[in-house]
Image (cartoon, rainbow, N blue to C red):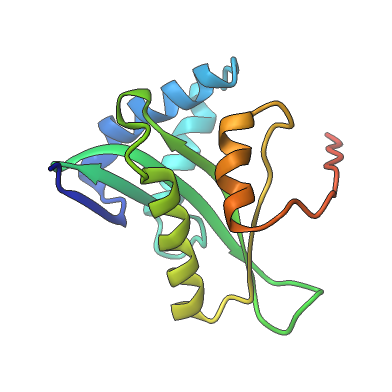
Length: 148
């Protein structure tokens, strides 16, 4: 049985995270400038920045991640946590890593006093939606994104 662990990313995880990140972007058929990826990694490692990255490791090798961002909320006195990106490598799917990453964030929210955990997904991502629906039903909100 493979050993699994979930922990915060460390500087030595950069190459493995970049490989997972590239697979995640390919899954969504998306390209980002390298400067965006560089800035994301820098934010992840910056202790003064709220962005965090939890890695799921299988036998010591990163196989998935949850990129999250706590922030103030106008809907509760506590902060919320936005799960911005969740990904499990295709070779590690079916082992419960996606569920484990979400459960890990739920525990982190409790430990840090964050009031809510929320996320978005593509309407057509049926596999992810089946996992998410097992936690909570969709709240039927739609996202609107404007680039000023």
